[in-house]
Image 1: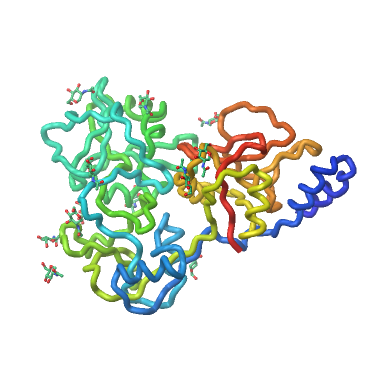
Image 2: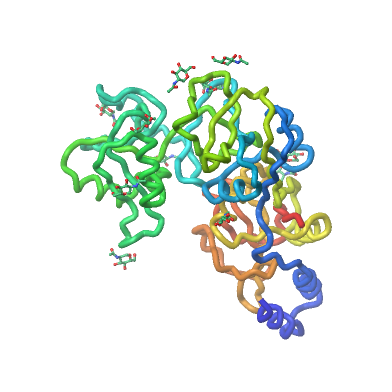
Length: 391
Ligand SMILES: *[C@@H]1O[C@H](CO)[C@@H](O)[C@H](O)[C@H]1NC(C)=O
Ligand SMILES: *[C@@H]1O[C@H](CO)[C@@H](O)[C@H](O)[C@H]1NC(C)=O
Ligand SMILES: *[C@@H]1O[C@H](CO)[C@@H](O)[C@H](O)[C@H]1NC(C)=O
Ligand SMILES: *[C@@H]1O[C@H](CO)[C@@H](O)[C@H](O)[C@H]1NC(C)=O
Ligand SMILES: *[C@@H]1O[C@H](CO)[C@@H](O)[C@H](O)[C@H]1NC(C)=O
Ligand SMILES: *[C@@H]1O[C@H](CO)[C@@H](O)[C@H](O)[C@H]1NC(C)=O
Ligand SMILES: *[C@@H]1O[C@H](CO)[C@@H](O)[C@H](O)[C@H]1NC(C)=O
Ligand SMILES: *[C@@H]1O[C@H](CO)[C@@H](O)[C@H](O)[C@H]1NC(C)=O
Ligand SMILES: *[C@@H]1O[C@H](CO)[C@@H](O)[C@H](O)[C@H]1NC(C)=O
Ligand SMILES: *[C@@H]1O[C@H](CO)[C@@H](O)[C@H](O)[C@H]1NC(C)=O
Ligand SMILES: *[C@@H]1O[C@H](CO)[C@@H](O)[C@H](O)[C@H]1NC(C)=O
Ligand SMILES: *[C@@H]1O[C@H](CO)[C@@H](O)[C@H](O)[C@H]1NC(C)=O
């Protein structure tokens, strides 16, 4: 990014004095590039009960480990040589309420009653905790059916080979098997209401002339992450895990079984994994410049988003914000006419919303705190919460 630095420096004579001080401040930012991770796992080789482990992690780090996807799982395993059992930050909630999740990590489940047909289950479909889509003339609704019931299913492929992102698999399988099939051969079971309702789905379905039901990536369970986030990733070892053994309410990873998960009585003492968050949401309203100063003084920098993993992780964080938008380290230079990250990274990955605000001087980038968490151009004197990266 030396070019950017040089460009900015060469053109400084065109920049007003006030703006100049801001550019200086921006240039002083610490380069982060690929060395900064969003969060880190720490394996603690001391035996503790689940709650003691939770207390320890909250004191020394952020919380007991949570796992977003398979890449996280691999990082978690790589953070230790240990081959035994260790607690992770997942436990069975006490009120017994089940929460719906999409199988594909990062897709947020939003309840919309008009997508469901509460009386839509066919007489042969046992009730349960997995979501299926029906095709029966006008009825294209969701219903909750027992996950053990074998039926056709719909996979989603992120690679968009031939633009055909959805695939109807006509080999009946139970939900768990269907999920493994899609994850192995494609990306995941079809997830997200927009994906499940889109035109391609209609084409897929109308190409079959029979009435049928098919699994999509919906399931509900009683398990919750210790830090309150709603990550949908589950990695249960189906040979060992039994979700009806009601006194085994804390989750552990079995490091000698590819890290797959099972559960045990929470009072048992085991080693555990903590996670340490490298980002912090500051729930104070500041202008963009004040936010930049604040982060540089107290932490590292205003956060940048350079890929979809970072976007997903930051989406989780901004849900807790109490302003409509949350400032990012994204800035427009009107002298040079482009957007850049204050951390010096190029704006290659983009997630702008559909509003057509023209680029203008004194504009900075913010992320919408509400779903679908797109980026927005905002006048930099507006007051929002913001996210700092730690050192
Ligand atoms: C974990 O370690 C293995 C083997 O050393 C490596 O192939 C893999 O990329 C690592 N995973 C991550 C997420 O770094
Ligand atoms: C459990 O779900 C019911 C029904 O949605 C709700 O009334 C109740 O408050 C929930 N309990 C808790 C502890 O969230
Ligand atoms: C629910 O779905 C219907 C039909 O797909 C849509 O028109 C409506 O806007 C959705 N409601 C919400 C709150 O998203
Ligand atoms: C709900 O499902 C039932 C049973 O399949 C069907 O008769 C009914 O038309 C469906 N309702 C809607 C609104 O799709
Ligand atoms: C799904 O099928 C597999 C293989 O037949 C079986 O081992 C597994 O227990 C089934 N899972 C559920 C939830 O029924
Ligand atoms: C894929 O999508 C692109 C742009 O949407 C279109 O031009 C192209 O024809 C599509 N290819 C196929 C095989 O449908
Ligand atoms: C992937 O697809 C092949 C061919 O359709 C199938 O035989 C195989 O079992 C699938 N893999 C998994 C893990 O389900
Ligand atoms: C799971 O645990 C329950 C209660 O302890 C038991 O009745 C059931 O047989 C177990 N299921 C399996 C598959 O081991
Ligand atoms: C988890 O909680 C639910 C609802 O309280 C209960 O039915 C289930 O048996 C529990 N599972 C385990 C493994 O504790
Ligand atoms: C949990 O259940 C198992 C089998 O039902 C029993 O052996 C064990 O003593 C129980 N543990 C506690 C703490 O209640
Ligand atoms: C926003 O968060 C701050 C800090 O947690 C709190 O003091 C304030 O009351 C919150 N405001 C609203 C409207 O939730
Ligand atoms: C921040 O501003 C929002 C409006 O954008 C307001 O609702 C919220 O209470 C403010 N939070 C604090 C901590 O002042």
